[in-house]
Every structure is written in C-alpha cells, then in structure tokens.
Length: 155
Image (cartoon, rainbow, N blue to C red; front, side, top):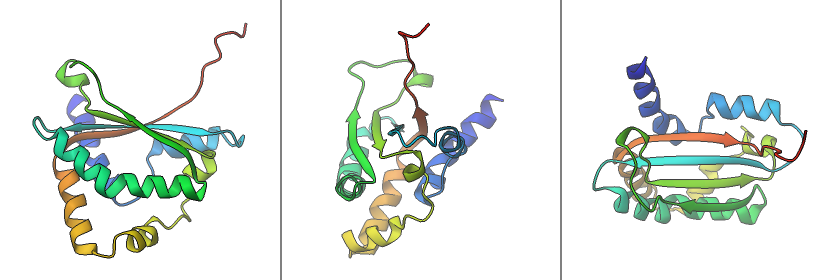
C-alpha cells in the first residue's frame, strides 16, 4: 500500500503540469459551492540539495502566473512558507504554497485557459518548457491539499 501511495504521489507533478485537477480538488469543489474563498495548500518536496534551484525556477516561471491570476481576480492571494527546521524524511517538505481562490468553482474551472496565459507571458516557449521540465525533474514529491476552516467556538 505504501508503494502504491508513493507511486501516486510521484505522478502528481505530471498531472499538475498537464493542468488536470486532483480528485481531492474536484470533490472539495462539489462539497463547497457556497461562493466562499477556497484554500488549497500545495506542498513541494525537492530532491536533497535542489530546494534552492526549485525555488528559483518556481519564482521565475510559476509565481508570475499566480500573481497574474490574483490581478485577474481568480485568486485572492498567494503565499509561501518553508519549515524553519527539518522533520522526518517521510514527512519532509521544502515549500508550502497557499493559494486562496475566489471560490471553489473558480479553483476548479476547467474552462480557464492557463496555456494561453503562459504563451502570452512567456513568448520563449522553448526555454519556458525546458525550465518547467527541470523544475519537476528535481521534485521528489508534490501534493495538493484543499483545506477548510474548522469552527472551534460552536457547540
């Protein structure tokens, strides 16, 4: 079972790169049609020694796309954190990017054409594709986790 999970997690970057939605995101969208902000945490685990290179490529090629979507109103905010100290290898991650989407429907809108935005923002497609391929080559794992608030003051 652990091996199946490792294989599934290792395939997530390829699915994300292709612009497909995860099952968890699709299920969360169906469960949250209330128009409230929809929060997803994206975890990235780079191969040992490659976290800085991953971040450099992320900031060059992916973060500007996210910023543009904030400008467009699809997303309300994008932020990132990294752990101050290390954890166990099986629970290790290098960066967590939190995206607050306008709502669940927007987060899961299959009609949004990110490829057109990429072509507009990165006219040198050969370099862009090469660098994005490298960004995913140095990833050991990547997972997306839609989250929701928990009301602690209710009875």
